[in-house]
Amino acid sequence: MSEALSRAADYLPVLMEGVWVTIAVTVLSLLVSTVLGLFWAILGWTKVRAFQMISRTFITVIRGIPIIVQLFYIYFVMPDIGINLTAFQAGVIGMGIAYSAYQAENFRAGIEAIDRGQIEAAQSIGMSDNLIMRRVILPQAFRIALPPYGNTMIMMLKDSSLVSTITVAELTRQGQLIASSTFDNMTVFTLVALMYLVMALPLTYLARQLEKRYKNA
Amino acid sequence: MIEVRDIHKSYGPVEVIRGISFDVEPGEVVCIIGPSGSGKSTILRCLNGLETYQKGEIRIDGQRVDPEDKSIKAIRQRVSMVFQRFNLFPHRTAIENVMEGPVYVKGMSRAEAREMAAGYLKKVGLEDKMESYPGNLSGGQQQRVAIARALAMQPEAILFDEPTSALDPELVGDVLSVMRQVAEEGMTMVVVTHEMGFAREVADRVLFLEGGVIVEQGSAEEVLRNPQEPRTQSFLKRVLNPLI
Image (cartoon, rainbow over all chains, first blue to last red; front, side, top):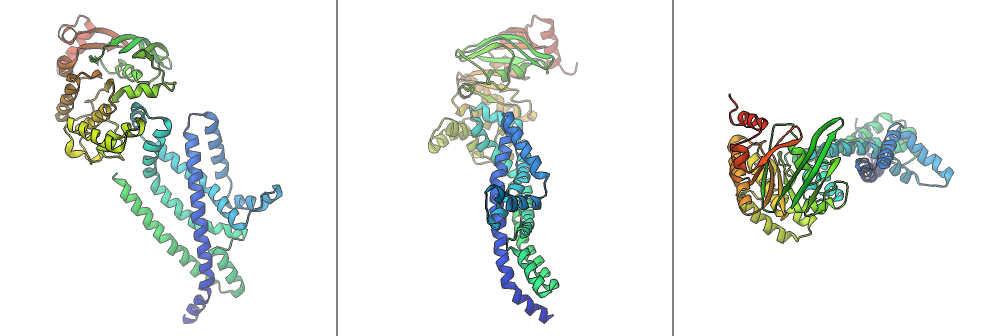
């Protein structure tokens, strides 16, 4: 047991490097997916049919393709048409785009849950569509979308391990590398699992706090 | 000030407004009464472009009300609305609800708007609830905030869409007395209501609608005390003596 612990201590610095990359991938792709998801949701909400079509088509296509295939596509196929990205860039963009479809659905549900009377009240004081979106719909949709958003954050943290398949040296990848050279699968993957868990716990807590805080407002 | 000319509106094959015309003069209080499904809320909502209409014309101070046109935003700033279900913004406090239009639509400074909003909230008897969220207010209080919100736009007219229908009976009086006060100060008002007492005391004119047309109109005295049309008579009988 103590032997395992001392080996674990040996692996820890390498795995910690992976942890930072995992956090970076998660945070950046969360950012990309949020902005993009909001964009798709608003595009779908406009009265312009062409915009609605674009939004719906994009969401349908992205949701129908496994994330791992999307990552392969961006990392391995894009160079053929002259777009060369580092593995890290491809990972963040791929995860961001893939998750934007789910974010868009979250936001859309939030927007649609808002009572028609809210929009009418805003119109009745002369607000433009723009202002209605910004001052009335989004702040309320945000509260409604928050609990699913918290879940999405946790899923993205875990799914960031998918970028290991395109050689991004995040936690899972670092674990695989150590395991394949030491054959100490038990110690390595127990550590990797624990490290994901430790990262997920504060997110779970945060999601719950936010949910509680916005429930009454 | 408000001119309504031969308005027709259909939902699919169902024609809910079948040729309605009336005028509202500045400072006048017009109550619209009638059974549910008579089209009274629909015609009211046409006045500020919340509903479209297929035929006819509505003008506010000579300007055509066209829900599809950009000009509708300017018209709505001049014709406020109070809704049956209040429709306050639940994520903002009472005073923020009242400030919203002046600050974000009219571009007033926050300090100035706050002072004005506080004045209107005081006027509707809610100076002690300024920082409350709508969820913590009673229906009657919420509706009074909604009236303050409408007043804060300093409109030329206010439309009331069954403002007391969603309230518990004991809260109706507070809202009606605020409305009466607003009327006495000379505000032009169009009120869709089931409150016959309010119509009798405050309205300059009463329109009785049924089946998408104006069946009878005249002074409150004429229409409510001495209705000429059999349909008006039977409606009033049902409303005033619901148990018989």
